[in-house]
Structures are given as structure tokens and as C-alpha cells.
Length: 262
Ligand SMILES: Nc1ncnc2c1ncn2[C@@H]1O[C@H](COP(=O)(O)OP(=O)(O)OP(=O)(O)O)[C@@H](O)[C@H]1O
Ligand SMILES: [Mg+2]
Image (tube, rainbow, N blue to C red):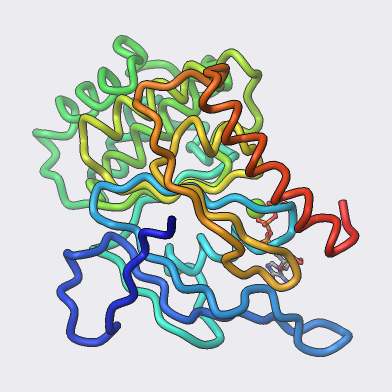
């Protein structure tokens, strides 16, 4: 089932993968000594691929995403990405003193887009996330779902080949989340971006991904992966989505039982 093809980390053109994680381990110092969080993770994300990383709370999903983002360094192993990835978190992290449009323009500015083009590009990005007309809105005037749409537009403004998402819809109600799943799928298909999406919601993982990678806990290792061979666009309530989710949930429960937590 696994589609990851192990290749030598050295001498490979960066563009044949969006992200390449090779034998990555990460430990943190703790009062009890070294705390091994990730153990020998090897995982590729192909160009244009949508991968979800699934696992119990505390298994190291955010740690791994932060490593791929370059926010922290692995204790051992290597990570390479095709360019600098864009990031999106559960908290939108928009600047509250800027309008929706200016939040996006700031990302464009940091990317070096000339001032004269920023306004038009920001408007286009707002249109892509279906927020046409929200340019002048301040963050506090937007609903939670709208804020995440602006955050998505801002992430897309970075023009990265790889989008890293850490539970971006976890704080939203079920209906809003469902709508944003549709939007993300549409945007992913339109832009041909690669996405590495972290969640502990099995249905969400299956609804979105071409491949679901399950991490074990304590330490986090790749426990299993599934290719999701279900046509897009999918619905979270589709029978095929439900069936695979049940299978994956069983495995996840097994992982959690084995480690006696949560
Ligand atoms: N900077 C750090 N220093 C020390 N320990 C850390 C640090 N970052 C994470 N950890 C530990 O690593 C483990 C994994 O944390 P991480 O946040 O990656 O889990 P997660 O899978 O994202 O969980 P959740 O689903 O709850 O978000 C936890 O035990 C956490 O306490
Ligand atoms: Mg996390």
C-alpha cells in the first residue's frame, strides 16, 4: 500500500519531491533525561500530493511539521523541501490591526512582490478563497471560518510549492469545517500545490488526502499508511470515506491502547 519510494537523500533534484523526510528523529531535554518524540521517520510528499499526518494527541505531529517548516532542527536525519514551505495553524495568526487585504499584502511584500501589484494580487487571492469584498474588513469583523479563509489566502500569497497545515480547521464548527474542506480541495486541485496536513480527526484525514500516514505514539513512528483511492470531490459522510475511517480508527485506537494514554 505504501507509495513512498526510498531514494538516496544525496544528489536528488529537489523538484522530484515537495518534502523529503529521511530517518528523522527528534528528542527534547526533560527532567527525566532525553525525551524521544520522533523516532526514525522517513516520509516523502510528492509534487502535487496531498498527505495527511494522523496520530493521537502528543504523538509528535506538530513537532514533525515544525521540522519540515524549518522552525526547529531534527536531532538526527535530514529534511529537504522544494523551496520554503507556507504554514497555516489552528490559530489564524493574522495581524489584528491590519485589514484582511493588508494581511495578505504583507505576505506579498515579504515575498518581494512590487507595491503596484500587491493590491490586485490580494484581491485575486481573496477571490480564490471566496472572500471577494472582504479586502477592507478588519480581523475582528470576520467569523472564525472567514479568518481561516484569510489565513489560507495569506499562506497562498507566499507562492510556496508546499503548504503545511497544522489542524487549521480544528476550532471551527462542523458545518464551517465541511465547507472549508471543499474549498481546500478545490484550491489544491486548482493550484497543484503539495499539502502536508496534520490532524487527529480520522474522517477529516480521509476526506482530504490522497494518502493518510498514521503515526504511532511515544515515540512517534510511521505506523502505517493508506492510499485513499476515492474520487474527489468527496463528502465527509460518503460511505467509502466512512468505511476507510472505521478501519483507520481501529488502528489508531490500537496505538492509543498500546500506550495507555488519552
Ligand atoms: N519544544 C519542546 N520542548 C520539549 N518538549 C516538547 C517540545 N515540543 C513538543 N514537545 C513534546 O513532544 C511531544 C509531542 O508534541 P506535539 O505537539 O508534536 O504533539 P502533537 O501530535 O502535535 O499533539 P496534538 O495532537 O495534541 O497537537 C509532547 O510530549 C510534547 O510535550
Ligand atoms: Mg499538534
